[in-house]
Image (tube, rainbow, N blue to C red; front, side, top):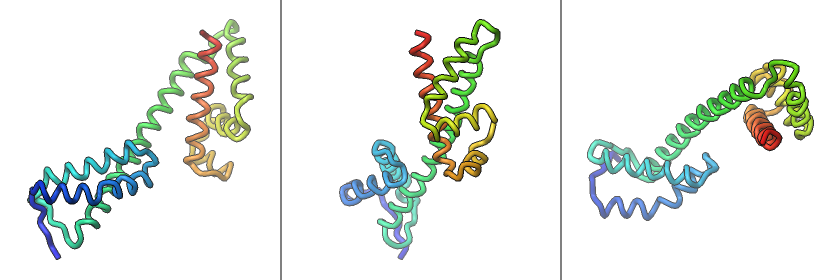
Length: 172
Protein backbone atom coordinates (compact mmCIF):
# COMPACT_ATOMS: atom_id res chain seq x y z
CA UNK A 1 0.00 0.00 0.00
CA UNK A 2 1.42 3.38 -1.07
CA UNK A 3 0.25 6.39 0.92
CA UNK A 4 1.03 10.03 0.31
CA UNK A 5 1.14 12.09 3.52
CA UNK A 6 -1.03 15.19 3.27
CA UNK A 7 -0.66 18.26 5.48
CA UNK A 8 -3.65 17.78 7.74
CA UNK A 9 -3.48 19.17 11.29
CA UNK A 10 -5.90 16.64 12.74
CA UNK A 11 -4.03 13.72 11.17
CA UNK A 12 -0.65 15.00 12.43
CA UNK A 13 -2.06 15.67 15.88
CA UNK A 14 -3.37 12.12 15.99
CA UNK A 15 0.01 10.71 14.85
CA UNK A 16 1.87 12.85 17.38
CA UNK A 17 -0.35 11.91 20.30
CA UNK A 18 -0.39 8.25 19.36
CA UNK A 19 3.34 7.72 18.75
CA UNK A 20 5.33 10.53 20.37
CA UNK A 21 6.07 8.91 23.75
CA UNK A 22 6.80 5.50 22.22
CA UNK A 23 9.13 7.09 19.66
CA UNK A 24 10.97 9.03 22.38
CA UNK A 25 11.45 5.81 24.36
CA UNK A 26 12.65 4.09 21.21
CA UNK A 27 15.13 6.89 20.40
CA UNK A 28 16.36 6.93 24.00
CA UNK A 29 17.22 3.23 23.67
CA UNK A 30 19.82 4.30 21.09
CA UNK A 31 20.90 7.65 22.50
CA UNK A 32 20.74 7.10 26.29
CA UNK A 33 19.73 10.76 26.60
CA UNK A 34 16.05 11.71 26.97
CA UNK A 35 16.61 15.27 25.74
CA UNK A 36 18.42 14.10 22.60
CA UNK A 37 15.68 11.50 22.06
CA UNK A 38 12.97 14.16 22.23
CA UNK A 39 14.92 16.33 19.78
CA UNK A 40 15.23 13.45 17.32
CA UNK A 41 11.52 12.63 17.45
CA UNK A 42 10.61 16.30 17.10
CA UNK A 43 12.88 16.56 14.05
CA UNK A 44 11.17 13.56 12.45
CA UNK A 45 7.73 15.08 12.96
CA UNK A 46 8.88 18.48 11.65
CA UNK A 47 10.41 16.82 8.59
CA UNK A 48 7.21 14.88 8.00
CA UNK A 49 5.14 18.07 8.29
CA UNK A 50 7.46 20.17 6.11
CA UNK A 51 7.61 17.50 3.42
CA UNK A 52 4.02 16.33 3.52
CA UNK A 53 2.70 15.96 0.01
CA UNK A 54 6.17 14.90 -1.17
CA UNK A 55 6.63 11.76 0.93
CA UNK A 56 5.28 8.43 -0.26
CA UNK A 57 4.97 5.90 2.52
CA UNK A 58 4.75 2.25 1.64
CA UNK A 59 2.88 0.29 4.25
CA UNK A 60 2.16 1.34 7.80
CA UNK A 61 3.00 4.93 8.86
CA UNK A 62 4.13 3.51 12.22
CA UNK A 63 6.92 1.59 10.45
CA UNK A 64 7.95 4.79 8.65
CA UNK A 65 8.07 6.76 11.92
CA UNK A 66 10.09 4.17 13.81
CA UNK A 67 12.50 3.70 10.90
CA UNK A 68 12.96 7.46 10.58
CA UNK A 69 13.60 7.82 14.32
CA UNK A 70 16.10 4.94 14.24
CA UNK A 71 18.00 6.44 11.29
CA UNK A 72 17.98 9.93 12.79
CA UNK A 73 19.20 8.48 16.13
CA UNK A 74 22.07 6.64 14.45
CA UNK A 75 23.04 9.81 12.59
CA UNK A 76 22.95 11.73 15.88
CA UNK A 77 25.26 9.14 17.46
CA UNK A 78 27.73 9.57 14.59
CA UNK A 79 27.57 13.34 15.04
CA UNK A 80 28.09 13.08 18.82
CA UNK A 81 31.07 10.75 18.30
CA UNK A 82 32.66 13.34 16.03
CA UNK A 83 32.11 16.01 18.70
CA UNK A 84 33.58 13.69 21.37
CA UNK A 85 36.69 13.07 19.27
CA UNK A 86 37.09 16.79 18.74
CA UNK A 87 36.66 17.55 22.45
CA UNK A 88 39.24 14.93 23.40
CA UNK A 89 41.73 16.37 20.91
CA UNK A 90 41.12 19.87 22.26
CA UNK A 91 41.70 18.63 25.82
CA UNK A 92 44.87 16.82 24.78
CA UNK A 93 46.17 19.90 22.99
CA UNK A 94 45.36 22.06 26.00
CA UNK A 95 47.14 19.72 28.38
CA UNK A 96 50.15 19.38 26.10
CA UNK A 97 50.39 23.10 25.49
CA UNK A 98 49.59 24.46 28.94
CA UNK A 99 50.52 21.82 31.47
CA UNK A 100 53.60 19.92 30.39
CA UNK A 101 56.80 21.39 31.79
CA UNK A 102 59.33 23.01 29.51
CA UNK A 103 62.15 23.43 32.05
CA UNK A 104 63.31 22.30 35.48
CA UNK A 105 61.15 24.91 37.24
CA UNK A 106 58.09 22.89 36.32
CA UNK A 107 59.31 19.57 37.71
CA UNK A 108 56.98 19.99 40.68
CA UNK A 109 54.02 20.37 38.33
CA UNK A 110 55.08 17.24 36.44
CA UNK A 111 55.23 15.40 39.76
CA UNK A 112 51.68 16.53 40.53
CA UNK A 113 50.48 15.36 37.13
CA UNK A 114 52.07 11.96 37.69
CA UNK A 115 50.53 11.80 41.16
CA UNK A 116 47.06 12.47 39.76
CA UNK A 117 47.56 9.78 37.10
CA UNK A 118 48.89 7.32 39.70
CA UNK A 119 45.72 7.80 41.78
CA UNK A 120 43.35 7.02 38.90
CA UNK A 121 41.49 3.71 39.05
CA UNK A 122 43.82 0.96 37.74
CA UNK A 123 42.05 0.29 34.43
CA UNK A 124 41.66 4.00 33.68
CA UNK A 125 45.31 4.62 34.56
CA UNK A 126 46.45 1.86 32.20
CA UNK A 127 44.28 3.13 29.32
CA UNK A 128 45.31 6.74 29.97
CA UNK A 129 49.02 5.89 30.04
CA UNK A 130 48.82 3.77 26.88
CA UNK A 131 47.14 6.64 25.10
CA UNK A 132 49.08 9.58 26.51
CA UNK A 133 52.55 8.14 27.02
CA UNK A 134 52.72 5.36 24.44
CA UNK A 135 50.64 7.16 21.82
CA UNK A 136 48.46 4.15 21.07
CA UNK A 137 45.21 4.68 19.21
CA UNK A 138 41.86 3.74 20.76
CA UNK A 139 41.52 0.54 18.74
CA UNK A 140 45.09 -0.51 19.62
CA UNK A 141 44.40 0.00 23.32
CA UNK A 142 41.11 -1.88 23.03
CA UNK A 143 42.88 -4.81 21.36
CA UNK A 144 45.75 -4.85 23.83
CA UNK A 145 43.53 -4.75 26.92
CA UNK A 146 40.68 -6.78 25.40
CA UNK A 147 38.06 -4.10 26.08
CA UNK A 148 35.68 -2.20 23.81
CA UNK A 149 36.64 1.01 22.05
CA UNK A 150 33.80 2.78 23.87
CA UNK A 151 35.34 1.73 27.19
CA UNK A 152 38.67 3.15 26.03
CA UNK A 153 36.98 6.43 25.05
CA UNK A 154 35.23 6.62 28.40
CA UNK A 155 38.44 6.00 30.36
CA UNK A 156 40.37 8.60 28.37
CA UNK A 157 37.61 11.21 28.63
CA UNK A 158 37.21 10.65 32.35
CA UNK A 159 40.98 10.54 32.83
CA UNK A 160 41.41 13.94 31.21
CA UNK A 161 38.52 15.27 33.25
CA UNK A 162 40.10 14.04 36.51
CA UNK A 163 43.47 15.42 35.49
CA UNK A 164 42.03 18.79 34.52
CA UNK A 165 39.92 19.10 37.68
CA UNK A 166 42.74 18.07 40.03
CA UNK A 167 45.26 20.35 38.34
CA UNK A 168 42.87 23.29 38.43
CA UNK A 169 42.49 22.72 42.18
CA UNK A 170 46.29 22.60 42.56
CA UNK A 171 46.87 25.71 40.44
CA UNK A 172 44.15 27.86 41.93
